[in-house]
Image 1: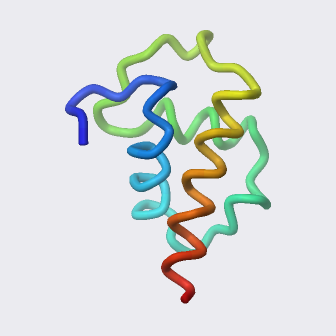
Image 2: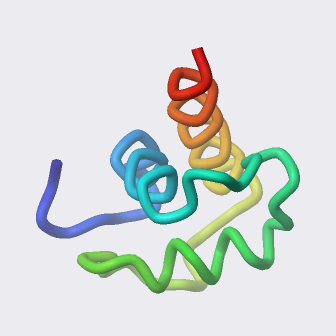
Length: 72
């Protein structure tokens, strides 16, 4: 995992979000909350304004993969 996270590091961010919020269903998280949570992650160093719906969706799907794997 990279020391510095950017919006394009969807897989790494998804893992960290799953570790921080293991009981949250990623599909039930609003993008406004997801954006804030990503920006608050240790090591996140990208411009908060550089996010997009596509980048948030990629993070959400990576988090969903982790969440589903943990339930199997």
